[in-house]
Amino acid sequence: MDLDEAFLSVGEFGCYQKRLTGFLVLLQVYVAFQSMLIVIVGAVPEYQIDKEEGLGDEDFIKHVRYANNFTSIVSEWNLIQHQAYKVNLASSLLFAGLLIGNILFGPLSDKLGRRPVYLIGLLFDVIFGYLTALAPSYGLFAASRLFVGIMNGGMALVSFVLTQEYVGKSYWALTGSLTNLTFAVGIAIYALLGYYIRDWRTLAFVANTPGVFFFLLSFLLPESPRWLYSHGYTDKAEEVLRQIARGNGKEFPTLKLKECNRTLSGDSTHSVFDLVKYRVLCWRTVLLMYIWYVCSLVYYGLTLNAGDLKGNLYLNVALSGLVEVPAFPLCLFFIEKSWSGRGKSTAGFLMFAGLACIFTMFLPENNSLFLNPAILALLGKLSVSAAFNVVYIYTSELYPTVVRNAGLGVCAMACRFGGILAPFVPSMKSLNPSLPFMAFGISGISAGFLSLLLPETLNKPIAECIEDLQPHAYQLLNKGKQVEETS
Image 1 (tube, rainbow, N blue to C red):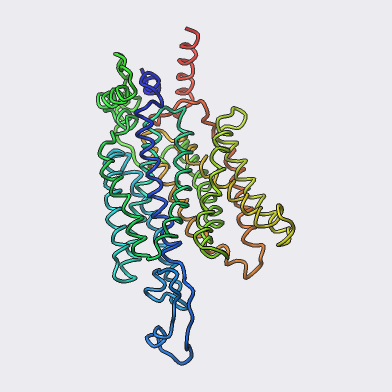
Image 2 (cartoon, helix red, strand yellow):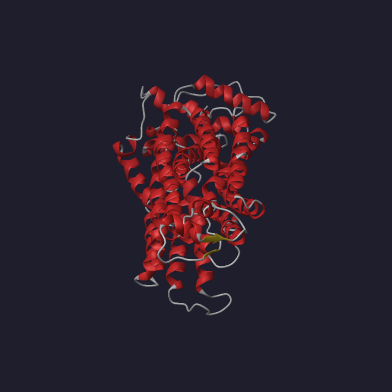
C-alpha cells in the first residue's frame, strides 16, 4: 500500500495524532511571544525633558524623566530622538533572522530529518531568548534578536511541516488553520502578560520560559513518517505508523508499504536547487514567492503599527491578534468546497484585501460608524490573514515531500522580505496620504490574479517524490483510486 492508504488504515486524525498536532499547535503561542516581543518590550513610555538645548548626550540623558507605568529597552538605554531608530533596528534584525532561518532550516530538515532539526532549533531559540532577557547592553540585545529570529523562524517552519505530516492529507487544512489561529491567540496572550508584567526583562524572561517545557516534551515526538518514507526508510516509516495505530487504538495491517518512486528510481539526493532544476517546481516557486511576499507585505503593513495607535497599548496589541480569529473558520469553509478550493480561495481573499485597501482611499476619515477607513483596513487585514492561512496549506500541498521544507523555506524567505519592507510603506504618506493603501491594494490584487495560475490541490494525492508531479503519475494514482472504488 502507499502512504495515503496507510494513513487511512491507522487513522488519519486519531487520538494519538490529535495529541501530537495539538502539542505542535500550542507551540505557536511561544512562537507568537518571540515574534511580538519587541512591540511591548520596545514601546516608548511617556517622558519629559527638563532641559534640552546646549546639552551633550550624557548630560541630555540626565534630564530625561520617564513615566513609571512600565519599563522597556527605550527607558533603560534611552532610545529616544536620534537613538530611536535602534528599536526598529532590533525589529528588523528579528525579521532578517527569520529570513536566514527559513533558508537554512528548510533544506536541512529535508536532508537530515524533521525531528532533529526542529529540536536543535528550539533548543537554541530558548537559549538566545534568555540572552535577550539578560542582555547587559543594547548591542547584545540586538544580536540576540537576530539569533532568536534565525532559530525561531526555522524551528516554526519545521514544526508546521511536522504538524501536517503526522496526519492524513484530508486534515491538512484543519491542522494548518489551527496552527495559524493559535499564533493569533498567542499575540493576545502576550498582550495580557505585558499588562500584568510591566518590567521588560521579567516579561522577556517569562515569555521565553514556555520554550523550556516545549523542548523537554518534544523528545516524545516521532520522526515524520512521510519524510522516512520519501527517503527510503520504509521499515522506520512502518514503525512510526504502527506507533500511531497503537495510539489510536487500532492494529496496523499486515500489508507493507510499497517502495517510494524515488527509491525505485535510485534518486537519493535532493536539495533546494531542485526548485529551479525542474520546470514544474521552478514555475510554482516563482509564483508562490511573490504571493508569500505580498501576503507578508500587506499583513505586517497593517499590523506592526499596533504599538503606535492611539489608546491603550495592551488593548491595541491584543486586538491586532484577535481580529484575525474570524479569518480561520472562514478560510476553512472555503478551501474545502469544490467550487473554490485552495487556488480560488487564495485569489479571492487576496483580491478582497487589495480592494478593501484601495477603497479606503476614497472614504473620509469619519464617514460613518460601519463604513470608514478604519473598518475597511480591518476587513483588509482579516482577509489577508485568511489568505496567509490558505497559502501555508496550499504551498505544503504543491511541493512533494522530498523538497517540501525547502520549498516552504524559499517561500518563507520571500515572505520575510515583505515583512522587512512593510514598516517603510506607511512612510510614503509624506508624499501622498493615499500611496500606502495604493501599494497594498495593487499588490493584493496582482497576487490574487497570479494565484489562479497554480494547479488546484483539493482532493488530489500528495506527491511524495518529484516523479509524482508528472501528469502521468497523477493519472495512474487517480486510475488506481477509481479501480478501488469500482471494486
